[in-house]
Image (cartoon, rainbow, N blue to C red; front, side, top):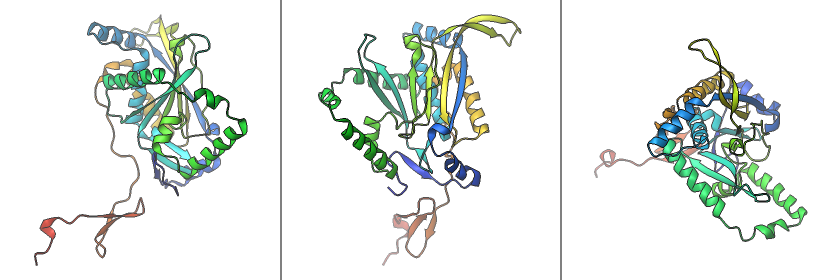
Length: 316
């Protein structure tokens, strides 16, 4: 409340133009950029085949999830969000995706959310993801059918109250993580698994998710080979990305694209620890108040107690 949230830390933007952007584009839906990443399948197919020979089974979904987790770890500004006109840095990398229990007609889909620190490698990400999917498809919600019969006016009232409490930062981190896919770093859709092409999915004004990605089916296309200057036929797939543009500039975005291509062309890099940069959050230095013996954090606006060491204590 009052600028503090359980899922992120408030940032104070000092650049005048960047401060104006959320005032000019107040909604996420009017600040959305669309980006298409086209990727050759050969590098990923070769990686999957090599790992299969070692007894490790990876899928395109595993690699895509690890790829996006690595993007948020190495480019933490993408893991920010706006609530109103306030900018926040998310505390974790929360990954959300919808999974069908089966491909039978009428079977419902369930939401899977996984929390990452950004330090995980591909095997660790796969283990977390598989565990979360298995838990989600086997969970039984006894009151699910009863909720379908709740009157519309009560649903409308509950939704409005949730929006209000979210704006005030009164919803707990546990509640948001377990119940809302709209409060996440990224929402991902694996359309390749159901043989559907990529789409540019819309962002929602509810919640704080500013990044939506879809992975489309693979197909044949003409590919320019930079080594010999020839055009050849090969398999490709696309990632359709929709993202909130208000917290990154063009140069930062370009560096992310270069890193994305590097990792997709060499998936072995995902088995290594992430190259996490130093804190990019602007923080003022902590100043010690000699009169009170406390440290004042000017960026947070609060006092922190400092424990005195025994060496500095006077002997009476």
